[in-house]
Structures are given as C-alpha cells and as structure tokens.
Image (cartoon, rainbow, N blue to C red):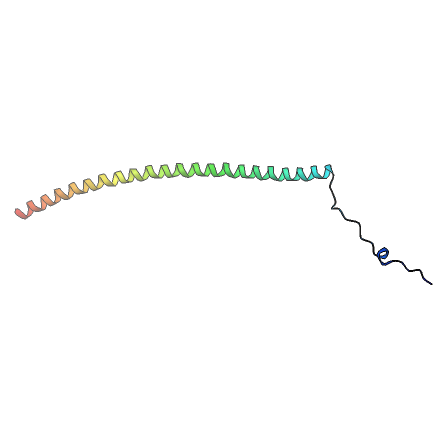
Length: 101
C-alpha cells in the first residue's frame, strides 16, 4: 500500500520574490546617463536662448530703423503737402486774376 501524504505537505507556497536590486555601479551608471541627458538639454536650451536673443535684438534694431525711415517719409510728405497747398493758393490767385482780366 501507498502511504498517504497529508494534503498540506504536497502544496508548498513559493518563496516570496524580491525585485532585483542594482548595485552601486549600476546606480552610478544610470545617474551618469541622466546627468548627461540633462546637461545636453540645458546646453541646447542655452543655445536656443542665445539665438533667440540675437534674433530679438536684430528685430528691434530693424524696427527702430524702419520707424526712423517711416518718420522721415512722413516728414517729407508733410512738407510736400504744405508746398502743394501754397502752390494751389498761388494757382487759385492767378486763376482769379485771369478771370478778371
């Protein structure tokens, strides 16, 4: 005859599993990779800021130049309008004199 084994002895619970842990070299390597990525991103952002700063200064200078040029054109047009008004007055006076003659 076969000896009977109690049911609780047949089914054993598996040993609890612990997640793998990394040693100091692995943590240092991961930290180094993250630091490298962060440094690269910071450098790229700094370069973008410098480029944007130069573009901003060029745009502001260009706008100031355009404003100066526009002001010059407005001044010339204003003087031209005044002169046209004077010439119109002279022409109108001559026209009246010609009608009276």
